[in-house]
Image (cartoon, rainbow, N blue to C red; front, side, top):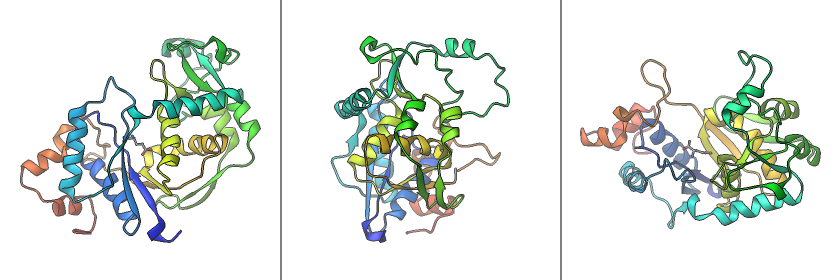
Length: 285
Ligand code: GLU
């Protein structure tokens, strides 16, 4: 795809102040879209953790970094009807089911000890306890899961193109990994009506994103997203998973790591170019 046709996005969740890791993600997305379009999306489906003050701070920090984006900004909390429609479509195809299990139920029903067992994008593999339940029995307190076996039976071979530095190339998705490790992923969390996987796929398509840029920690979520794109007949973007920014001890920066909040660097008099240099990026790019 010619760079001028590229559409990328930065999709932060307003659950805390932006730190250096976010600045890196935003700058990578912005630079990958240099001659195309850079979009912003606020991922605020978890209303118990998201705050409007943090959202306002995100706009301020990104403007300070020199980024610009078209308005209005997409906010996931405004898009519940779209997520609902996607779920309805999967329900019609018999691919989802309601699940009442708590985390403790899931732990208790896993017979084998879990040490050393590969983890999927959502952690331990769901054992399928509620798989026989039908959507007609669903209540808002239930989570909604994808029946991974049924979903895989509906699609052919799956692949995606990665442009990131760590694993560039075409990746054929391992169907056994999806079935046995990712398993019946949650598409709507209890009392939430959606989940990260569902919203991101629906919204990347709605925003006509051509290249999803995000941290390497989400690489394992990509096969699930590609499968959902296929099931919902949505266009498939390519991917660019960037390296994660770590602190001096090699620990990944977390959102609650306020010591590295961008606003604090700014208050200390650092410039956006100082931030770029700290992150190993070209100043003023
Ligand atoms: N909202 C996610 C985060 O803040 C990013 C999701 C994505 O880029 O796919 O980590």
